[in-house]
Image (cartoon, rainbow, N blue to C red; front, side, top):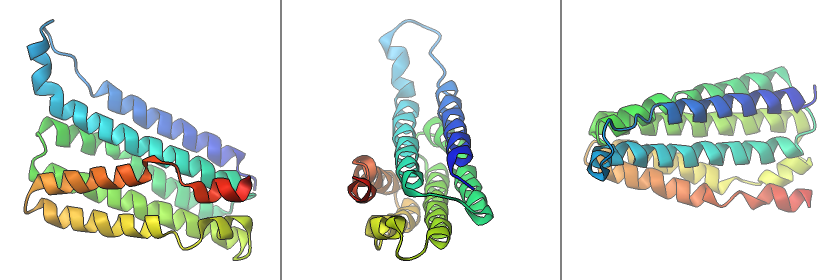
Length: 190
């Protein structure tokens, strides 16, 4: 199977995820700037999650750009990733509405952790389709950034029980680390 339907479906789901997140932003009922102050945590969560969704969309695009075909396992692995990403609007809203309290921050981290694992499983499924000597395999290499992200998420979830702001800080650090698109694939394609 070629990758076109998978790309189109994934792009659509990711667009819906972003739409749901923005619809969670409720404007204040007054026209005063003071009315925005209670919304600062919600807006911070939205920005962080928007960046994360953008990172996944960007890297997913690059990953599928070098993929020549997909298997049934790839389709399921992709759905697995989209499932975890689809929980991001809920986790984002809960964390923002509760001003970064412990349990919502932990749940947010668990969603990020599971999305990272799902992305890793997607790469494994694609590598099985393309082989160890493929352009995709050589572009991905050992995926140090992906592996260290999982370790940081696990640490962040555990440390969030000590102080939820540690978790938020570590989630932000991972986002910053991935904000610059992964150039491994671009170098291979170009």
